View 1 (cartoon, one colour):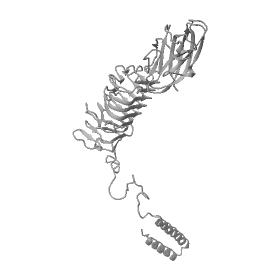
View 2 (tube, rainbow, N blue to C red; view 1 turned 135 degrees about the vertical axis):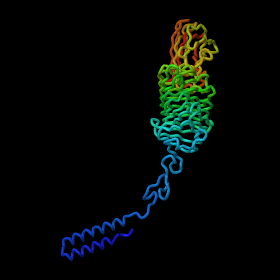
View 3 (spheres, rainbow, N blue to C red; view 1 turned 180 degrees about the horizontal axis):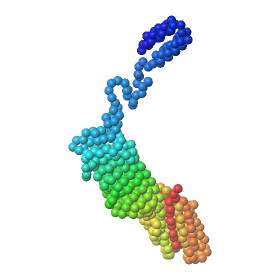
View 4 (cartoon, rainbow, N blue to C red; view 1 turned 45 degrees about the horizontal axis):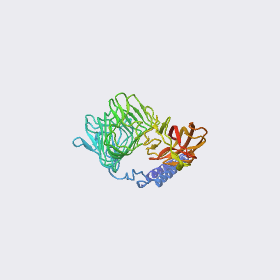
Length: 463
């Protein structure tokens, strides 16, 4: 940059003219103004920027230089390398072919508003991602598309913060090994058939909703099906979730902290005929069911598959074992060989009210645990013991898998022959799948012992 020193030459000529006119004050003021102006111009010249350097004195975008000719689109044409495409209209997507818009692999499509595909549908590539700004104002629909899924994929398909509106929303069929579904803030609105999800390692949905929508079917083999903090407001005569009889869940089906609004004629979860799910693998925790429809068709609180905790509107599962006998007349044989030896109490017991399907009674005086979750339980037993001889010292105890638990032992001293004497015992016992609990007795003498009455309750400790 060259300074316009010709300007200062003209100022000097004006000063000479003023001097000729003998005006000293005006000359002095003009000389001062000119000196200040010349100083300011020299300062500007020294501070000037000779070259723009991307990332140094002009910003870059995604490490892409803004210098040089050309243009970068921040709209439908992609951002920089095209890995993010902003979609404000159908035209921002790849051109359809025979009604199919094929989305590119490893590309994120960010929908900024409601986009109507006008009868076309989306087929996703490998790791295609669909995003929206908010499910409140970003939506994918396709007016005129009926009976065919709006979105089809054979791959992992992350979706976030968007509403899907369709006659049939989904046809997702993964490989069951490397593919997974992970959704957040996804609403299905006015979808009479949400569609099928089949053969994925996991299906996880959070902070999402069915709004006048239902009939989401799970099929094939899926590791975990999970939903958290969701609202499921089913469509008329629809079913929110259908677990097909050909479905195999290898880990769990789990819905927590969610609400179901199921009106008359609608269903929340249909498991008939039964799919394959591990015991304790059909999990509903802290959910609210309302509306008066059918909440559970198939697995309910009586199923060994179910684990329901702190739900409202359905009966929660219990983990209680209960058996009893009254007025038993069968003696437990002691004899000389069994003096001071623990022997399982004889008699015929009956499964009591409230017994959980996780506890079974394969033989009398035995409760067998079939739950898959190892837990601590309180064991309570009350009853009576008696003997045909007076002055017997009889002990009663809990036995786990045939081994007496010493801390549970209680001793009765019978002063009268054939007189029932009451006993009560308690213990805290850790129980795992396949463990069984029984009542044993011991006499310090050879006289037989009878447990006349017995009532056993085993209850899981929660905390």
